[in-house]
Image 1 (tube, rainbow, N blue to C red):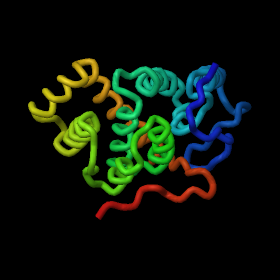
Image 2 (cartoon, helix red, strand yellow; image 1 turned 90 degrees about the vertical axis):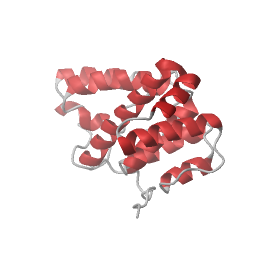
Image 3 (cartoon, rainbow, N blue to C red; image 1 turned 90 degrees about the horizontal axis):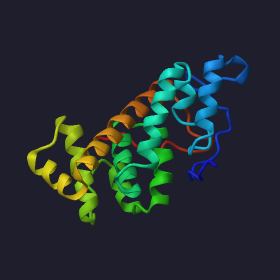
Image 4 (cartoon, rainbow, N blue to C red; image 1 turned 30 degrees about the horizontal axis):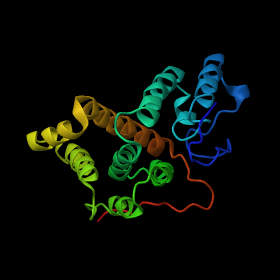
Length: 199
């Protein structure tokens, strides 16, 4: 049974460069992959997957990795969503931010933390765990690696499994953000772009 993701149902409509494919236009492989995605914990095909179905092998393998990173990561859900929001901000991925802000709030990330990330600044009042996630992800994006100190504090708190999960969720959502931006996946009607340009 699909879980309640907290996201609005996908209407199946929408524009962009790679809009949803009508079932009658899908190949048998696309139909099979689409059914697998819709029948999993996401409960529907939304975000990057309508675009990715143009390459059903990519869509299928991507969604398997994403399913682990979204629903089974060793990083706690609120911190995992924080890492995704940092990625969405780095890429100014409007749809990614929109969707994962909903999930981050549901997971218990404080709104003030998300607001600071949206503004491109270090949040005030972070817990130790939030600070570690912010420093690891931000340093990874800014320097393309992390310092020994950042590595060791992240390892001490989340273990080597957590380090790999944190790298993986960051890299995965870079690719998701790229797909959403290139495909120009639209926000739902009436929803303003949540991310402002950074100066």
